[in-house]
Amino acid sequence: MQWRMKNMPLFIIATLLFGLKTYVVYRFMFDLSIENPMQEFILLFNPIASAYLIFAISVWMKPKNQMKYLRWTTLIGSLVLFLNLIFYRNFTDFITIPVLFQGNNAADLTGSFLTLLHIEDIFIFADVALVWYLSRQKFDLTVKLPKRGKIAATAVTFLLLAGNVVLAEIERPMLFVRAFDREYLVKNIGIYNYHLYDATMQTKTKAQRVFADGSEISEIETYLKETSPDQTNKDSELYGIAEDKNVIFVSVESFQNFLFDSEINGTETTPFLNDLKQSNNTITFENFYHQTAQGKTSDSEFIVENSLYPLGRGSVYFTHAGNEYNALPEILNEEGYETSVFHANNASFWNRDVMYDNVGYDQFYDEKSYEVTPENSFGWGLEDKAFFEQSIKYLQSQEKPFYSKFITLTHHFPFELPEEKANIDKYDSNSKTLNSYFQTARYTDEALEQFFQQLKDAGIYEDSIIVLMGDHYGISDFHNKAMGQFLGKEVDPYVQTQLQRVPFMIHIPGYEGGGVQDKVVGQIDVKPTLLHLLGIEENGDLTFGDNMFAEKNKDFVALRDGSFITKDYLYSNETCYDRSSGEPLPEENAQACQPIKEKVSKEMNYSDNIIYGDLFRFYDFDHSEK
Image 1 (cartoon, one colour):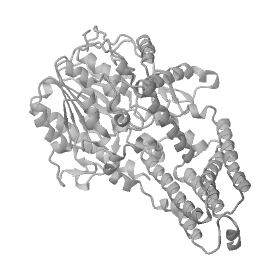
Image 2 (cartoon, helix red, strand yellow):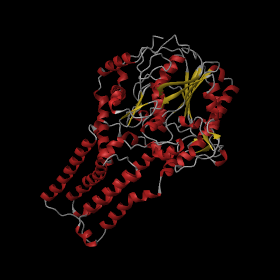
Image 3 (cartoon, one colour):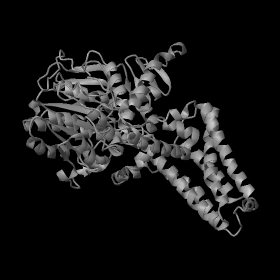
């Protein structure tokens, strides 16, 4: 073995070690799904091809520089793999360049980061140690080739890459058109080539604004006018029911619908919300889906404020905070509402201080507005009970009517809660995340119950409507095994998509027509719905959402990964399901989803074009038709 090492160039050793290591990480740590032998072969082939591309560059270097180059590229490549793994464990997604620009969020992620570390992660750096060791031995592992030999070694790179692309296109036709599905990209071209592809896409999108001239906006306007029915619907009993009332909008962190009516060891997880859902004063949409992507909570805010889709890469709050928008707070400002946000986190997290100002919020009550002590903070910061209690004085000081958005913190990954504050047992599964999830959910449920009482005690409740919305999932598909145990069934793509349902509840004091509605709706529908309840007509607005109370609605809710849900069908992972039964449609009926699939693609592209091209700067929003 030692003789072979002495006679094999280090760049070949590094290629084999790095490639095989990466395959093992893909297969057993990312746990990427494998559907056939071709996918398995590509998963093994692409990391070796990528590693050869990186390490073969060393043959053009002087011998004394080859060892240094191989040491540092092995380390850097391993760090890239490691950071993507940590990111994937939290978000079931891969890092993009826009996400890297969100680096100032890192300070707030320390607790989450430590939770995501596993002891087996040491394996990722095992080949780094071996390459460093070999590079410092007395026997010569450098390459001394004539020019023709260097060209030949480089040519192998292009052959390997070409082979990888051909195999990927055979396995997944139009792979590079499906840029929203990053897992398919990584499985077929590898994480390093994926990052090169992502850099290319970033350059392309940056150029879109420069070359945009506004010609596209008329096409988008025509599409929206044709596909969106009349949003006003003045004949609805709910039109203007909240006119001149305060709007208190609570974005409930990481809440998913499976929490409703759940029990742990005989104890209800969300007793207050269970009762609120059944109240005559509350309208609950049980098929309400979050539509966020990499921006998570900031995406949910963006969707609600603008009725536009989030971007597939990064967070709009970071990448396009300076764009022109026609956001809900801005519209309400013109109607005489004071607008504010309450969130006990630092103002720059998710670039909120910049974005809030741009979309028209009058006031942002960030962590500096609260008394945060070791006794009332844990996890991500100020506990929800103290957060709501300390916010009441600010609500009382606002001019009425007001629109105030609250963003909770306690029920945030990694779902940490001091033992003495827990009023429900942990779940028992192989997932620490899911086990703790029910305890913080129960705590937030208790905080919301206290908040309702505090609003009554402060004299605010009767003149307000209160909207509760889950911002995004809390349990990613990285925990599907544990979720399957809890649900008592396998979490397939159909079930995984159904798990994207989050609470959406409109509580209207004095209203007696509440109940649970089964209409399929999403976060993109919130803006036109709130304007409907407030009796505000925005005939000149451009939105992709529908008023949830309109008689005619768009026939689908689209998710950023290309999945969608309709009254009859659910489409996920390239499979069309019967929504009521959860069974895949038989082959002769499988094309039923195709027309909606095309609409979803068109809408996503239109919305992306608006954001990337900053197209609203070319559009005159007419606020005069009220």
